[in-house]
Length: 298
Ligand code: R5P
Image 1: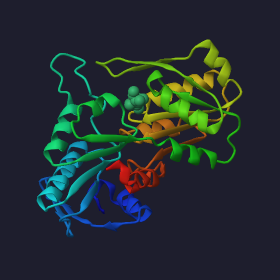
Image 2: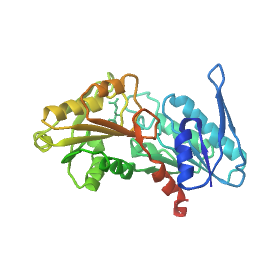
Image 3: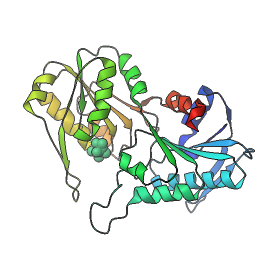
Image 4: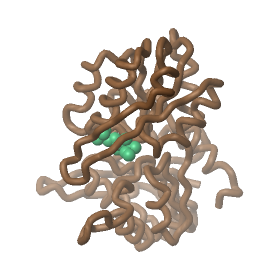
């Protein structure tokens, strides 16, 4: 097996190759003055199982195109199998046509990956399983929970924590975090206006009682604008919680999001390295490596 870290995931790709361990083949990469990508797989891949590691965070379209180009090139060069490790799978939020005429972009991504010759797609905490249903190739969404829990256990000073899902969709994920920490969880109710993007969040009485006087760990899959997290922080604080920590898998971090959250009085904030960022302190490398190492997964 060869690991080929794409331009978007050089560090994570290298970390995965060290964890397995296996050979790494680098990608020569530059952006031309007009914005187009130059890519070259700088090693022999013929007859090999080739694992391209390329996350698709901002600029999403460039990173997606680089991913497609690398997979297609590995296939052209005679790779036996091509595995795409896409730690953050862009466009997974648009998995359905919510309004007439919308492009179902997650389905388009699925078709492009198939076209490029990918045999297996591996991602982490996909936003919605519906997004994976569009794929005709095999897919696997790995859970970041073991890495997140391991991180939380090593944060000094967290007392009597309750885990908080900022919306009902995250309940299952958060319940697993709570179970592994040996504590309980609550979930908030969130509504997002599809036209304006405005987020409204509420908390019920039972949950208010549960968080009072306790530390709160708010766990979400994505922080983009930060509005979901900020609403949760404000509600939980109002409900009387003690220290509040924010944790997410994918720090998409739209412009101004981090500043907004840093100024919210949080005790701590952390994310995984599916997307490199100043808060990406939890690595998913060993989770990906152990899946890749297991023969039964092929
Ligand atoms: C949405 O359902 C996701 O789980 C996240 O809560 C959402 O993507 C966060 O976005 P934002 O930071 O823009 O509120």
